[in-house]
Image (cartoon, rainbow, N blue to C red; front, side, top):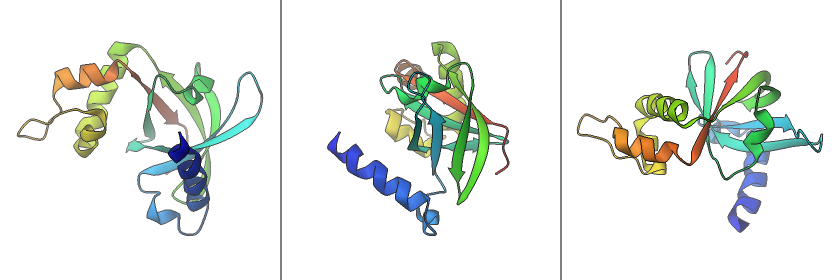
Amino acid sequence: MILTNIFNPFMILLLRSPLHMLASKSTLLITFTGRKSGKSYTTPVNYVPDGDVLYIVSLRSRTWWRNLRGGAHVIVRLRGRSLEAEGDVIEDYESVEKELMKYLQKVPQYGRYFKVRLDPGGHPDPEDVARAAQDRVMIRLLSFQI
């Protein structure tokens, strides 16, 4: 928790600065409105692009993503640019498993963060992906230009 309290403000500052390129290849800022509070929140998250969609993975135990349920307008700070997008959450286990498999096929090196082993061909182990999907959600960001 202490590390997050120090890390997030640093990443927010970095990603809003001219030095954003040090982290913006894999990390973006997402700004959203709290559904209950009406306050604006900004958090740094890792992302993976897939065509016109950006995918983010979050632990189910985190709460920020719940503000995107059913779709929500968000602002992303992506590679030095602020862009509008629509955020949506994928929560059901089967869909998360399917999307997480595609995510890890695109960036297999991220498997280590999810404790997903790779076979000799570099493909994610399906059982590990199914296990990892149990405590995660996928966030999909649409309607913007990279």
